[in-house]
Amino acid sequence: MNYKKLSIILLCLSGVIFKAFTQEKPNIIILFADDLGYGDLSCYGAQDVNTPNIDQLAKEGLRFTDFQVASSVCSPSRAALLTGRYPMRNGFPVAQGKIEKHKDYGLHPDEITIGDILLKEKYATLAIGKWHLGFNKGHQPIDHGFQHFYGLQSNWHTSHPDLDDVYSDNKVVKENVAFETLIGDYTNKAIEYMEENKENPFFLYLAYHSVHSPIKPSKEFIGTSKGSLYGDYVQELDYHVGRFIQALADKKLDKNTIVIFLSDNGPAICHFGGSAGALNGGKYTTMEGGFRIPAIIKWKGKFATGVNDTFLSSMDLLPTLASLAGAKLPKHRVIDGKNITSVLKTGKGESPHKYVYYYNGINLQAIRKGKWKLHLPRTSDDQPFWSKNKNEKPFNGSNLKNIGCRGLIALGRPLLFNLDLDMGELTDISKKHPEVLKELLNEADKIRKELGDIDVIGTDQRVPPFENIQEKI
Image 1 (cartoon, one colour):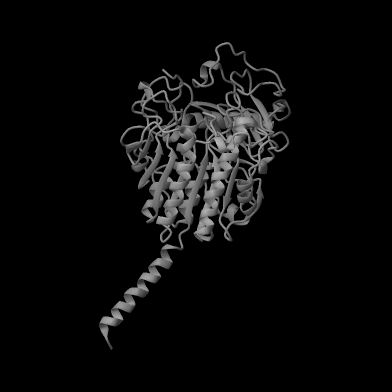
Image 2: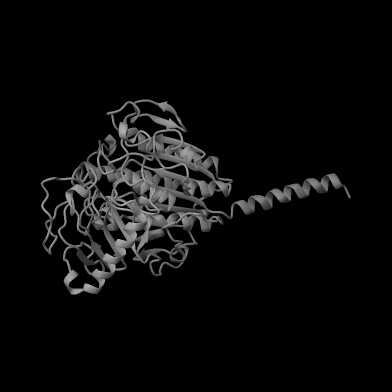
């Protein structure tokens, strides 16, 4: 026996076995749209835009009708998705600005993200696009489980020298970029990354700026929809999602890749357009139009297909992906998300959430249990800076058809809705169900003690490093 040849053969076989083992872990891709509304896609009923590529993804995967995020503005929603924890618990309850007050504000170094968990499982990890969770060292993507980052630190804007610069990791590689070039640049980078990592499991977090302001689609898309410039912008997003999904198939990676498409919050209908479909309100509100978003999840041959009505949360992604990657959840902290693998595999099942809480900044404004949703009394002073209106009179009626795009800024009494029958939150039924009203009010008191509220510091609340949290300055 030639032991040298035998050792070489065994070494080669071990390499094949190791490769096969590592490839058992699925690749994971999160495609995160910005400000895309529940009614902005044709697969969700939009009539003035055509989104064939996202529609096809929905046809091949699970399309959700009751998928929620944890905030109706960008930064807190992103923090909750990545950590599986409410913004009040992870310390990121309000949107971050490039302002002196927020100079030390960022995703806390102690928070554990999906990237952190998958990196320990030998995944390659990359964040592309919009970060918006901190500008300083310790708060960057490369400090939170991503080996590399390519994108903008926040929203694109010409108001500050840094906000239209593209970073690679923590260094500027392109200055004063034209906004219209970003979506194609990000998609190209993502396709390159897939090619570079096709032999090992990878986690790609691709956070597009679309369809956040400025509403500036590339010139080749202007005039292509029936939905004005905003509709053109949505169709451009669809085009690049299609390019990316096609590249995934061309590289024969689609069979072992989980693709998750969702939006960070509802549409900015007061400012830039968009549609929340049959839902009331939009971005900046705790109405369903701010929190319920389009969401699609696909794993070819492994997950169910069709339409799913289970009440789920973006916070569920962390424990679910950890489980699918064979990882253990972080200890010594509350994870608010739940493992929804069984729902994904079967396409059916009950919601794992007994109660869900709707905060606007640090103000608890609504609570949900199953089909029941209770809006809590509030004043304009309670609101975060993006929703304040000192002249707002408290709403005391029973019909919400005419409350406008800004939602319930001031509310004189609790309002109860049955979302199974009234997903638009149009008719208050609190007088008909006093027992439900009492239960949810009691739960609100309990969760305030844990997560906090205006003038209440919760027992498990991570407080941001500045005062007057609801104020901009």
